[in-house]
Length: 257
Image (tube, rainbow, N blue to C red; front, side, top):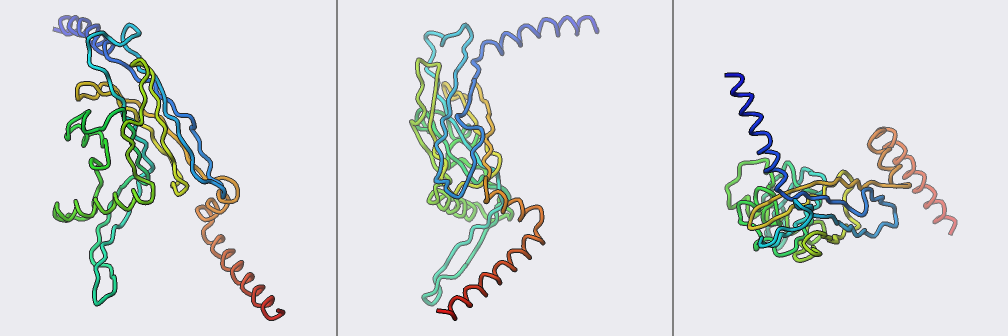
């Protein structure tokens, strides 16, 4: 029995290798692996590029052309979305919904509109597009309420430039090389970002690859952020003392004038 199992495994291994070798492979990269944010930071432009490696070195003839989708995500964060209501002429907070994990930044670029590439189920699995984000609400609200709050969250992030879609922003050359440009706004949060690239053909994801991008503060901003994180008590005391000193100096100058 062991000999038969070993022989079957030996026969299956070349078949599995041949099957994997018949699939194309993505070789992605980004123009900047590290982005430093200083006081003068006004945003950055990311160039995402790479190559599609086909078996035999070229795209097989007679097959449908492939498409590329690139998704850049920021670190997840807990966020509370509040719904306002007008009462007696005054806007007040009415209802709210907290999400355990929502991407702080989300941008997607594609060679064609995503709804033309894959069906709704595939979009949901890979979170391709703003309408397919899988957020995690902390409460068990009814589906209509969750949909309303998720739409509001996406709209708020979109207005801030932190969520957006760029259909037809990916250029594919000779079916092998691709590139796309995505904008990182000045208000982008710091942390570890991921750039996911998907190769799609006939409504199926054939290959995927990920590259990491680190966005961090630099200069005086980095010093302040590190001090607030690592020595919060000392940082708070210094901030209070500095505020008192500046207030006293401003009062002294005002009396002199």
